[in-house]
Length: 366
Image 1: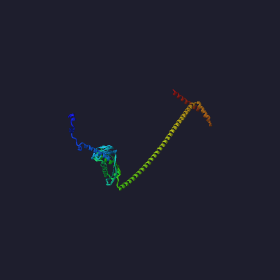
Image 2: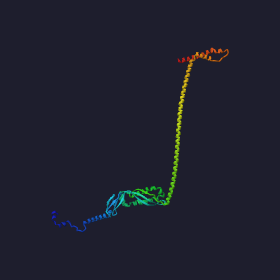
Image 3: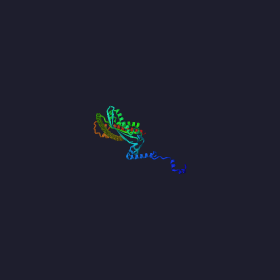
Image 4: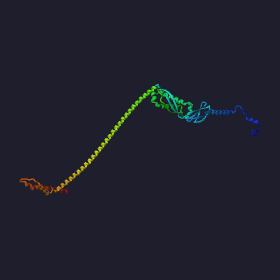
């Protein structure tokens, strides 16, 4: 149809071509707007009357988890202000930082049948942010009831039933913390990997009064034994100290004696060397004197030998006869005194000796 024909048509014909309009008040396109306006009115009224049902705050250290119609939504929100549909969407803050769960009054029976009670066990744990949806989907908001509170009761009873009261209360009490932590973490890693067990603190359990008195008496006796052992150890240390001091004193005295002896030996050795030097000097001096005497006697002998002339001997003979003061009586006295033959024999003998010495010297020179 051309534009010219459209212009010549009357209004009634144009309404027929475009189709009939729905009458006012009948269902049609205005229903959606009515519901929208009604919803806006309800939201405004809820915001005025119940502001917390529309706007909520997620605290720091938590994330927001949401349920719509009872079904968990696959979304979480960070700390801060957020909006949700009132009366339709439910919200719960879930802590993702470190938290401490306290499990109190845990009864258990030991291997010997004694009932004891752990007043308080503290479990430091944390839920990882990327496992919040899976953990809530499997175990709900109170997931710690399943994997911490109930699990602690179970593990404590298992531990007590396999150990005696002596072991639980004294011997291996310091190992309970680590064993509980390992047991909790093992099951959480297997079934709820988003839960991390940081540490477990176990307080001393309450035991029956009679048993406690027995333990106190036992501890007193053990303390007495320890005191006696400590006294004995102190006495041994004192004796050992005295022994060490005595040995040290004896070693000091021995060292001093050795030093003094060495000093005396050194002095004696010095005296001996000095005496040896003096003796050697004396020997050298005596030897020099002896050599000098020998040389003097030798020279005197040589001089006397040179003096032994017949004239000198005759002079000496006459001088000796002249100095003789003895008196002889008899007719033989003059002959004896003036016996020229005796004097001649003596002089001849001396002359021969000198001649033989001269000949020997001549032969030696030749």
